[in-house]
Figure 1 (spheres, rainbow, N blue to C red):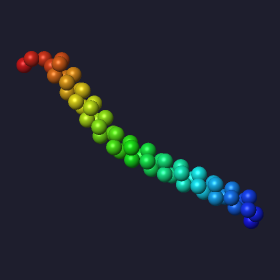
Figure 2: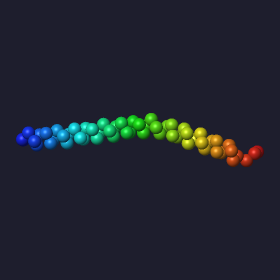
Figure 3: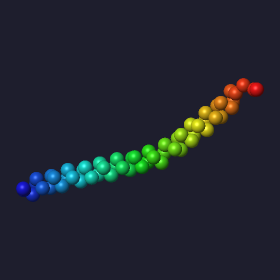
Figure 4: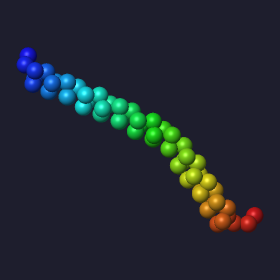
Length: 56
């Protein structure tokens, strides 16, 4: 294996490693963000429901 080919393989491996790290970070951010968005949506729906609720 020549030096250029070896460096090319190293670069490919580093690119794949970076891709895996970025995907993991995105998944973590999504896990943190999703409950907040769900809470906000349910709060908004409760407020909307109470605004248009028929008196009993």
